[in-house]
Length: 248
Image (cartoon, rainbow, N blue to C red; front, side):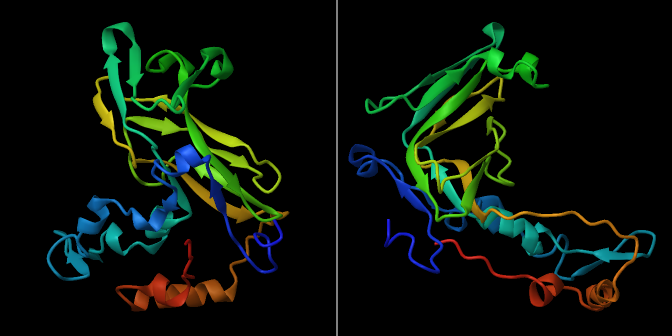
């Protein structure tokens, strides 16, 4: 413990039992699995010019999501917990049922939550299978004192088959296995979720107290920011305000 929480360090520790650790896909920095569609996206929507002229003669930006740094930050924030085995899924629309099958004998990768546990949620009456499920992760997560983790469905991955619930866990004090409740969304799916598929995004953050303030006076610095925005076509946010985040 002394070495893990040495002064100045910001480390997140993922631990699994040896039988899992030696054979299962391990957590990985989110930036190492950027979606192929994002990699293949072009810099400009049409042609090779940052500005596009509309039919009415007005000019508009021609930049795509590929140049949106805030969007990229969500793709690369934190770490991914990956599916630790192949999971075969078959939905039975006529019976409103969904079946999960796997070959691993070490631990059941998916379990269920009774509908009564979420009966007041707006989605309760439209659940595929009629219940909620949970991924039983083999991983324990540990963070330094004062740090928690946000666990969420992988941001901007547009996974249409399932969606996990978002939660915050104080992993500096709680050190137990963390499971990921989820709902199955695709009513007509039959196929395999391969081992190594991102199923949850884990983002560590420092717990701090905040106090909200409202104002109707726009500071002068904001007006200066607007001047920077309108004087350049590209990389204005990246070059002026963006701060690099590192997750190793």
